[in-house]
Amino acid sequence: MQRDARWRSLTVDCAGRAGLKAQRPGLVWLTGLSGSGKSTLADALEQRLHAAGRHTYLLDGDNLRHGLSRDLGFAAEDRSENIRRVGEVSALMVDAGLLTIAALISPFRADRDRVRELLPERFVEVHVSTPLKVCEERDPKGLYRKARAGELKEFTGIDSPFEVPRAAELTIDTSTLSVEEAVDRICNYMAAAGYIDSF
Image (cartoon, rainbow, N blue to C red):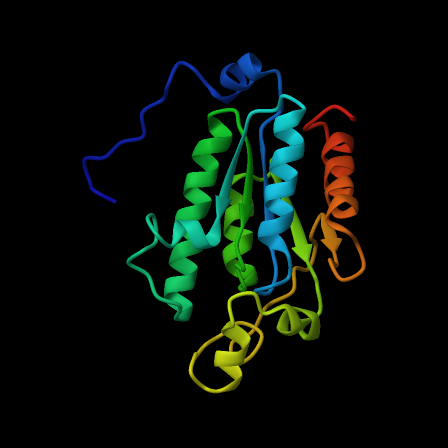
């Protein structure tokens, strides 16, 4: 941090911004292995919320690698920095009054916990717990095949760990639930927690 950079208090706050949108802002963070269904669920969730008139924004891990984190690789330090950046952007979006959805592998528990600390009462962790075998069978980008062949190093679930959340608000296995059923579960949780009305 620069020595002359001071935090400036702003007159319009999160409550004021959210009030204009008539919603309680928060961050739904989907974490899980590649191919587990995070992006599909995140997109379906945003569609459902958008159709209900909610103000949303979706941060997709792959998309963010094209801009915000295009200078980062996939070593552990780079993965942690990626999550730090996305966490900071997510916090800004929540402060803007948005229901924010983030879909990233985010394999390390400590990184996810740091994002939770940024938004202690506005963070919903969803562990997309689809088994590795199913993710490998799907392998939409051919990454597991490359990892098993030794062409891709430090690949989560193969030669780099995925640390399962200890206290995720929701755990969803897309091998046993349809996309619609999974989105229903997320929306039901969000309604019970006061983020949205039931619909």
